[in-house]
Length: 389
Image 1: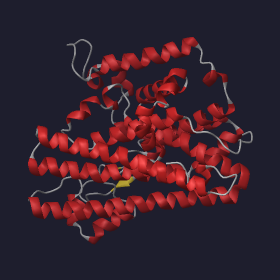
Image 2 (image 1 turned 180 degrees about the vertical axis):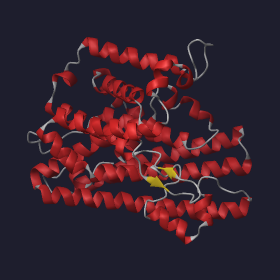
Image 3 (image 1 turned 90 degrees about the vertical axis):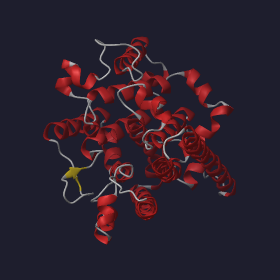
Image 4 (image 1 turned 30 degrees about the vertical axis):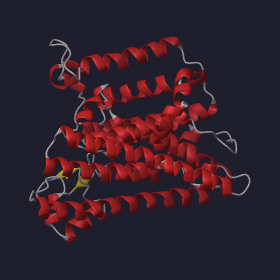
């Protein structure tokens, strides 16, 4: 890789997409939430999770590539290791908070949790499984994937520095073999149920590597990113719109355009779009088409820089903190729906308070980041003071 400039400006379009994915994840993590009818999974085969992981690879390259270049391998490895420990600490804290809150709610409200109940009933053994990442309950299973992918980033960077096509081919081969042989890691939330990671790291790594390669293409100024071929853009638009039409999330038309295309399409019946665990080629193509359209559109750059979207961009720039707050608020939303019912009042309460808190947190963290940058020694950029996300 060529040497990077000392200050590599962030692309606001990336932060906008990350912010939208985080807000989508919060809404989608609350079953029966009316806003879930309008989140990203309604507009294509992929959803916020694919977008989040793809942009995690992009942002990791943005945040750490220059560290390896300017300070060497040892410093780069230390930075990545510290970040992995930080994310692991957040995962443990979220897990323990969830166990405590759900345990209290079971006693106070009188219900039994299906998602995390088996771990609660196992006491300290269940908590230990969660802390050791042997048990990943639903809604708390994406950060462990992020830890593994970020830990592998130095290896990904090494490969991309020598051959971008070769590294992408190796990543795609691993994805294909994991799909074929169903390679995965065990997930022992319930000792009586032999489950696996919902986000299989052997397949989801391809999204992370693609994001890293995309960041390199942007940094190197590849013509494919600076001046996208009209035919390629047309293909991306056609595929993205085709996904929207075939998905028919709002059931706007009857068959033969299948609303439940997973079961009725003979082609997809062969390759499969489900389970989400193994990231079908249809999902890959969809998220890549969407991201390519956004990152090559000058008008989207102007849109992302608009003042109205500043809170969303702030969420994208502080993704770990905003995601963590979103997990807690989504848990509170699920409990409110369980205790008080799904009504107009509870919908308004959960969504206005939840989304408002996430946007406010993003702005507050942005202000804190700016204050740190102002106090930083000359020559250090905000990203050097604190890693992105």
